[in-house]
Image 1 (tube, helix red, strand yellow):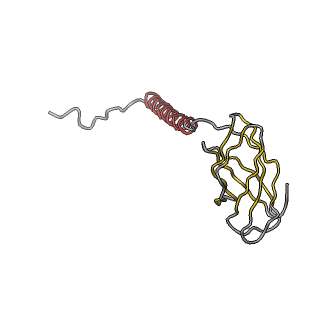
Image 2: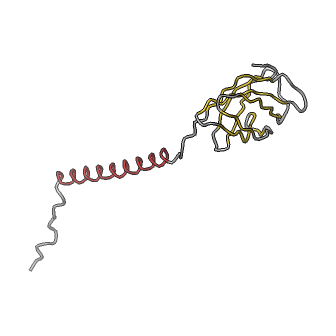
Length: 148
């Protein structure tokens, strides 16, 4: 007696059902990717901590001194929002510029003298970064060999 199942083709899933399955899988993958990306973006944007809003205004600077052991004197005014701010570090083009820790009360100006880490050519632009005791960074641009 011959086996009736041998040689007989069995039909697979119909093309309509196969198309629906592929669409469902694509939608599921898209939802998973969207959830992952929004979770990643939320973690990157939301983890910044407390915003620091100290505002210092550069009133004047004297950068005429050049040569060995040069320095720059800047006058900054603290405009708020706290009653005072403490400047703990200073950088000149990203290099440490020695500075004694200084506290500035709101509405007052304070001259600061920074010792520069290296020789600076006249007429070149440089960035001074002041760092407060709570981590705020305030940047100013100055030109060597000038006052402003």
